Image (tube, rainbow, N blue to C red; front, side, top):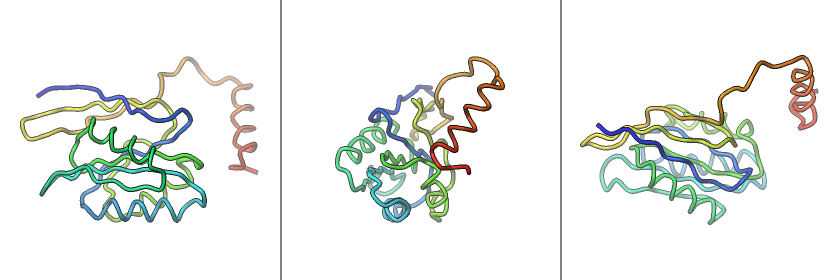
Length: 160
């Protein structure tokens, strides 16, 4: 077995949701979940089919983001994994809809941070072992940091 890492490539400031599902229907259902969640969201998604022709399937309403999702999915190549790359929304705006898609089994991450996917490869294929989401902590939150966090959530409209 080989262990490797794949860096997710995305535009600066774009968000991703990376997960695993179980059926070719995932592509259309994820498209509908995302497009119906946030007016004006721009996105592309790709899904690695794990049986039959084993193709990387894709959809989206932004060609560049769809191509980037395709490139990332091809680099990862783990059966039944999917990636959504999007702009004009935060993960919190669409994750509930994505999780409600019946084919979605798990979400590995939902973030704008740099992401590395830790992969295992066997003779049968590739699997996701885990992900590295962002960077390691640099210290403990101070009282000032707590105030800043609370203010940020209010500034972007997530708390009153």
